[in-house]
Image (cartoon, rainbow over all chains, first blue to last red):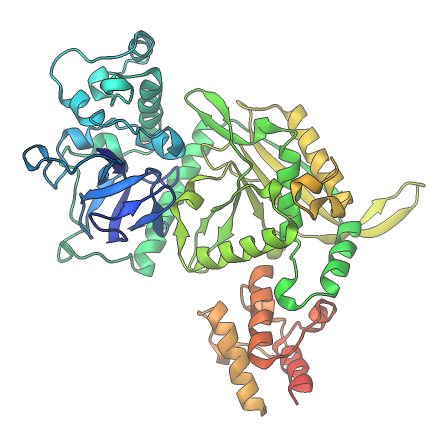
Length: 439
Length: 81
């Protein structure tokens, strides 16, 4: 039996309220299928599953508000019969199923590492005797002062691996950063969403949403400023060539196919990141982990207040027209509060473009556990010295980098900004998919 | 299309993008994007929606002519007949 748990859909997420199921017992599901709609502090999110199997049991009911890491669905693997009634767990999660130190945060961050192991999770936590663990896991747990009884083993026969201990350490860290989350949750885990609403699933009202979004942003940004030693760099980039190039490119096209400057800016960041992988990824468990792709979180302000930074995947491999379509689609769905869970968790870096608000320089706050944020200000006409000692007036933009000094240094950060500047001087290099791009 | 109908179409389109807008509060001669918080994506969507409803093609080179509500009304009126 596979358990699908409520994933963390962002650094600041502590719990979620099930709004509705999109599957029923007996349905076959595969990785990427939307199985439920869950309300978080920021938005109602279509939650995608990362396992494959047949739905055996829907553990929660609409209206339940549960902490991250709570079992939502039990799945049968291919060839596995339905669980015998006698051993089938009760619908309400047992204490073991919501054991405090679930590796939920780490598991959600790297879905592919999620355990396919049957009977791995509950027996280990509930067994009274010595935990079965690899020597390396045992040593690490001792070092980090983690009780093996709180670790879910995902190795063969439920053996605790080193990775399992690391996940718990990461989850504990995240918990420390967000007071009042999993660790303080009572073992019975499931709370009703409030008086008068028992069993009733409803999305938050705009006022509730606005308040909860404010506190979610506060938690994530306070954690960022508390934990991440930021360094900041900025440089001015001439935009004359790309402005003309984009105008010419758009001139022949119907309005629905025109590309906004935001798209080539995001593309330039993605291409530059290929040479600076230390800015693309996460700082986790005391070290930098490079992202598996270049998935750019785009900061989108919401009309009702607050912001959200869902990801566009594999930006470096996407041609400009497709990138623009995805960007437009993402912005409209973010504002309609209709995003998918992978979009909330996949970003390996964030780009924010505050130029529309008229500012020239962005000094960003990194979205943990990411290690960098690139900001673009307004494209404005500026006086610049040109090659032969003359001065000229030309459009330019200030691009800035806020980066995590634990993962990179200012020297590399400066080279990264120079690479973005270089790419923006040859706009045609931003147009195609990666294979066709001259490096 | 007569002017009141055109005006209503423009306001309806604007309110789909910025639901908080009260048409009566908009100053017709003040730049629209100074009065309503519209970013470049909102502005593009506004023009695309007008294009869809009215069948008016708006070349990118004309964007700079569309600053105030009066500009937008005048531009569309001239092209909707």
